[in-house]
Amino acid sequence: MTRAGHHRLCGSDVHRRAFLGAAAAGAAALVGDVTGIRILSQPALASELRRNDRRCILLWLAGGASQLETWDPKPGRPTGGPFLDIGTSVPGVRISELMPKMAANLHRHTAIIRSLNTGNGDHGGGSELMMRGRGREGGLAYPDLGAMLARELGQADSQVPDYVSFYSETEGRNFSRLSAGFLGSRYNPIELTDKMALPDVERLESIGELDHRERADLRALWSKRFARGRDVSAVSSHNVAYERVRGLMASDKLFDISTESQATRDKYGPTQFGEQALIARRLVEAGVPFVRVARAWWDSHGQNFETHQELTPELDHVMNALLDDLAERGMLENTLVVTLAEFGRTPNINASLGRDHFARAWSSTLSGCGVKAGSVYGRTDDDGQHVADGEIGAGELFATIFQALGIDHEKEYHVGARPIPLVNPGIVPVEEVLA
Image (cartoon, rainbow, N blue to C red; front, top):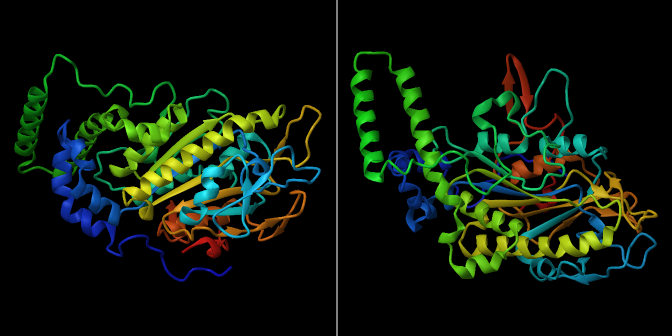
């Protein structure tokens, strides 16, 4: 692997700020109206956003999905289990028979990484590691992936959320400890657990849309008059915060999939995971930089094969629907879809017909923006016990994600006078899966 000498851009080479600088006033005005968020999904503006902005959707397989029942099967081996492998649309590449839809479309969208060795088989520590790309360091709160991508891909004056995380099941919900860390609360996630919509943002029924709009106009008039002859920095900060709140109120409509066609809803399916993936598509289409959709609980210490016989086909269906939908809308070239967990599962099958925690040789996938579709990186040995070729850790995976999204993985933040790179020094992306 070689270090990249330039930033990768997916889609148009026009820098996102060039477009958004020209469109900011109009977009801000549209979002400021409670009904205006709908405009963000209209063809003209959505088309420009797609061409210039990059987004990321993370499908988080909470609890640790088995690589042997998904992306790296070992049929016929003592560790292989009862399921067969099947050929894919990429000659010579085979995945679990539980994923026929992804097998048929592998050449169109997806790269498989089969050689993760991340070293942490604890739910909490592994989840934190795989959401940050590095382990804890005393006295320094690292931001998670969503916060970093919100910081790098978002806009300071955006009224839509920067970072949304869905995690509806109770098992493992808090293991990742999602946080913007030293980046500050501006980039903290909106965590949705009890329902699939923003909490406490509805306009009071006693206030009509016209009244709401007129109140906003009056507030803007008073704010403009107040700013005359005064230091406007505090006023500007207040105005930005106010418009952001109004934007979040308007964003509530993005979580309402009843406005989607029945055909689209049927494509994703009636499961909660499918509906949340559909909302994720709606969010990134409107300009949200990062959405995490968690599907739990893959922690199959017992009855591993029954667990994966239920969950893997659902992942196959929802992931394939999401990728096809993004591609049909012209969004996939600017949207990166990642599948990831805190670790994989042991090749050895325990006495309860389960697989235990395993961080030594497991798999992830990248699809869409900046990715070489149909590529496979790394290899495990015949029984899946060790990485045989191309071993990488969490840092290399994160560097690859950054590179695919056009972000310099060597970029540094600063905490006081201390420089903090996005990934640890010396780490390079996996160029073999990048287009």
